[in-house]
Length: 96
Length: 249
Image (cartoon, rainbow over all chains, first blue to last red; front, side, top):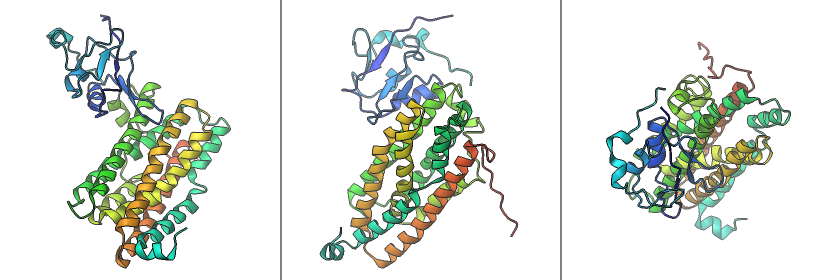
């Protein structure tokens, strides 16, 4: 069943580049967090792969408040707002 | 140029210049240049690009194994805090480069997941290879002091890596891969410079200098062998895993 997704992005002014989002996204085989090839090597979210709000795993692990935001509204998702903690918004690990 | 007074005050400065010059001589022409020339002739198709990134990713990610050992042998207060900080930065940078390679492999759909990429023959780590020999020999330097092993790696293999990365970042035909290679140049150059700093400041005794020279030669040779294996695997001159035949004697 297709699930509507909302684009989210990383706010580089708040991000510490600790890489937790990258690691956990890899761990569940979504691979939506990538590193830009430019010399700054900033982290980006590939909206084609990201399943937010179906998946919120990066929000749970991100330690830097305000570093992941909704692209349209700019609303901070770190720490995660209460509504993203619901059980139906958990994504199953993809079969490798 | 290093003056006589400077040399007397910092005997490591002469050594750093000597080691870097030796590696730069190696770097003028490396096995990777054959790949670049093949790419320029349009001979690197998708499959060969996958082989290239797969082997480079394998090389980069196995550096975790090396650095893990080195970090265990980095004793508190043996060197100024800057040495540990620079080492931390180097681990972070090499990790970034590793991630870039696998990102691109996934982005192009050559492997569906990182888990699958690990198992693919182009990306698999095989012990009996020159790549593995380079890594195992570096890991063996865990028993050496940080100044010596950084001299060997950062003023040896890293100097050679910087040279071919600069050429790939300038001339590789595929724009996305060219950007990845070019983006890694500043950090790799930083590793070479931090290697110079550590050798200048932290290598003072004749014994340490001698060990630096020996290990530097070994690391350079092993790295060039690994590059040779990578180039052969990409061009289809050897099996992707690059098995090495070990003589019975």
